[in-house]
Amino acid sequence: MPEHTLKVCRPSKWGNPFPIGKAGALGKVAPDRASSVGMFRAMLADAKMREAAGYPSDAEIRAALSGKNLACWCPLGGPCHADALLEIANSSDAST
Image (cartoon, rainbow, N blue to C red; front, side, top):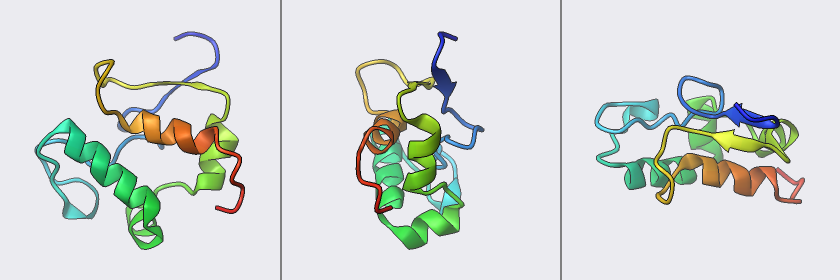
């Protein structure tokens, strides 16, 4: 992988816990990639869901992923949970 690049695919700490077509975190099943990414974004926005899924905090995401390139298996040009991670990682909101 290129320098300054981290894998964020399953089963890494940063992977999307909502797989397509089978039960993932919290027993939810995503029918397609867009739904999986939507569930991931919803989890990030809901402290109780995030805690139940055991997902890192925004502060942890910023500390580990800020300024990095993120690598996932999703095809380019479509929805990917890495986009949500990048939004958090490169935000300046240190309140979360």
